[in-house]
Image 1 (spheres, protein in one colour):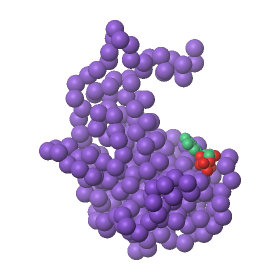
Image 2 (image 1 turned 90 degrees about the vertical axis):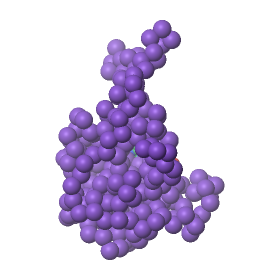
Image 3 (image 1 turned 180 degrees about the horizontal axis):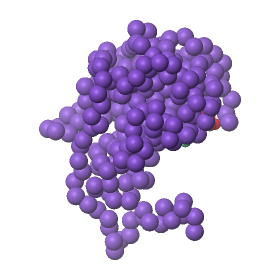
Length: 241
Ligand SMILES: Cc1cc2nc3c(=O)[nH]c(=O)nc-3n(C[C@H](O)[C@H](O)[C@H](O)COP(=O)(O)O)c2cc1C
C-alpha cells in the first residue's frame, strides 16, 4: 500500500475510534521585522461574486505593471482577513476546521506601488505586513516553484504554510486532511478577489518544498509550505496545463 492510501486509511474517522482531542491553541508565528499597516480593503470597487466566478481563469502571462497597495490589501483580506471577533477568537473570510486557522500567508512582492520588493508575512490580526527580507522576490518565487518562469513577471506571489500543531492538538493525524482543505478555501477566495479587481491569478502546487521553506524562513517541520498563488495584470489569457 502506497503512502497515499495509507494516509487516507490512517486519517479516517471510524465510529468505534473517534480521534478527537482537546481544544486547539491559537498561536501566531512570531516574525520579526519592520511592520507596515495595510490600507482597508476596497469592498466596493469590484465586480460581483457571480462575475468573478464566471471570469476566473488561470493566467500565466503578466504585463509586469504594479498593482496598488489597496489591491494587495484587498487580496490578503480576502485570503485570511478578520471579519468577526468573539472574545479571544477572531473569525476570518475563509472557513477553518475547528476555527484553528493553521494556515499562514506570506507574500513575495515584486511590483506593488510604494512597497519595497521582498518577502513579507501577512499578520491577519493586525492587517499588516512584516518585512522579512528585501530583494528580487519574483525570481526567487519562480525558482522555488519548479522554475515556472511566468511567475517572475507577476506583481505578487502568495505562499501558504501550515503550522500543523495548531490543528493536530485537536484532530491528531486527521489534521493533515484539514490543513489542505483550509488552504483550498483560502486560495479560491484569493483567486476570486484577484479576478474581481481585473487581475489574473494562477494557483501553484508544483513547488520545491525545501526552497520555499528556506525563502520564507520556516523550518519545514513545525511550519511548512502547502501552496502558492501568483497574481498580476494579465497580458493574455493563460492556457490550461
Ligand atoms: C492544486 C493545484 C495546483 C496547481 N498547480 C499549478 C502549477 O504549478 N502551475 C500552473 O501553471 N498551474 C497550476 N494549477 C492551475 C491548473 O492547471 C488550472 O487550475 C487548470 O488547468 C484549470 O484551469 P483554470 O484554473 O483556468 O480553470 C494548479 C491548480 C491547482 C488546483
